[in-house]
Amino acid sequence: MRLAKRIEKLPPYLFVEITKKIAQKRAQGIDVITFAIGDPDLPTPAHVIARLTAAARDPANHRYPESDGLPELRRAVAGWYQRRFGLAFDPDKEVLPLIGSKEGIGHMALCFIDPGDIALVPDPGYPVYSIGTMFAGGESHYLPLREENGFLPDLDAIPAEVARRAKLLWLNYPNNPTAAVADLDFFRRVVAFAKRYGIAVCHDGPYSEVAYDGYKPVSFLQAEGAREVGVEFHSCSKSFNMTGWRIGFVVGNEKMVNALMRVKSNLDSGIPQALQQAAIAALEGPQDCIPEHNAIYQRRRDKVQAALAKLGLKVYPSKASLYVWARVPEGCTSAEFCAQLIEETAVVVTPGSGYGPSGEGYIRLSLTTPDERVEEGLSRLAQWRRGEKLHIK
Ligand SMILES: *Cc1c(COP(=O)(O)O)cnc(C)c1O
Image 1 (tube, rainbow, N blue to C red):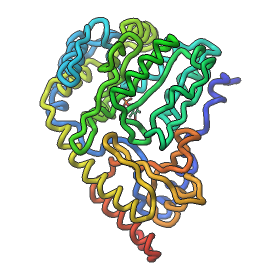
Image 2: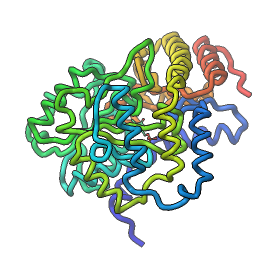
Image 3: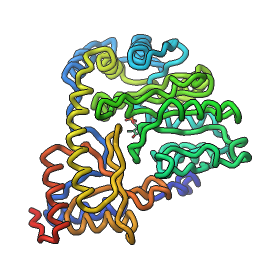
C-alpha cells in the first residue's frame, strides 16, 4: 500500500508533544487544566436546541438535503448580514451554507488552486488555509503577522512576482491565534491589492460576534468593492456555541460562492436539515446569548491577562476572539515554555509556533475554560511564580 504524497506531506499533528504530556500526567492521576482548545464550554442556547429536536422528529428532515442548503437558511443568513452589517446579499447566488466553515475553507482551495499555484497565507494562522492549499497541489506563501504591524500582514512586503502568481489570499480577523482585529481601512487596502493582482480574497470571520469592551468587529465585505474580489466565511460555532453541530456559511462574490457549491455538490450531500433549522433559529432568534457569553469571556480575559502580566509576560490586547496572546520570557522557545508549565503546574497553554514559524516566541490561551478551572489554573500560576510548592491533586 502506498499513500499519496499529500498524506506524507502533512505536518505532524501540531501538539503531539503536549498531547503526550497531558496523557502522561493524567495517567499519573494529576489534575490537568487546559487553556488549549478554542471550543466554547457553554451550552448551545435552549431555543436553538428546541428547534433542532423538533426538526429532528419531522420526517421531511430525514431525507437527503440539497447541497446548497434550505432556501430558508440562505435567507436567514442574508437577513443576519443585513441586520448585523447593513449589507444586502442575494440568498440564492451569494450565500452558501457549509458543514462548519472549516469544510468550506478546506474545499475553497479546490476552486482556485491548480498544481504549482500560490496561496497567500497568514503566519501564524489557522492551519486549514495552508493544508487545503497543499491538498490542491499548491504552495503557501506565508505572510508574517508581526507585532509592529498590529499582527496584520504587510501587503507591500509581498514580492510582486509572488503577488502576480498568487490566486488566493487568506485573512482572518478577529484573528486566531493573535486576537488582533482589523479595521475597514485595512480591508480597503486588501481590496485594492486584490484588484491590482487579480487575487481572490477569502476572509475567515468566525469571531465577528465574540468581542469585548463594546467593540464591534467589521465585516471584510463592508469595504467598498470587497464583493467583487472576495467572500467571507462565518460560522454558528463560536457565535452561538454550536461547534459540535457543524454548521457555517460563506457569503459574497457570486462566482466564488458558485464554484464552491459546484465542488461541494460533488463531495457532500448537504447539511442535515434539522441542523439547518437550528441555524435558522440561531440567526433569526433572540441574540442576547451573544452579549451574555461575551461578558463571561471578558471576565476570564481580564483575569488571564492580569495573571500573565504578573508572571512578567507581555500580553497583547484582546478586543475580540476567544484568545489571549502573550510573549514568552526571553531565552526560551514557545514549546519549552509550554512544556515547563505543564511539567511544573499541570496547566496547558498552546505554543504559538504550532500556528506557523512567526508564532515562535508566543503562547495562546483560550477563554473557553470553565470559570472555576480558570481560577484554579491561574492560582497555580501565581504559586509557581512565587516559587511555592504546588499541591496538585
Ligand atoms: C474555529 C475556527 C473556524 C472553524 O469553525 P467551524 O466550527 O468549522 O465553523 C474557522 N476559522 C478559524 C480561524 C477558527 O478559529
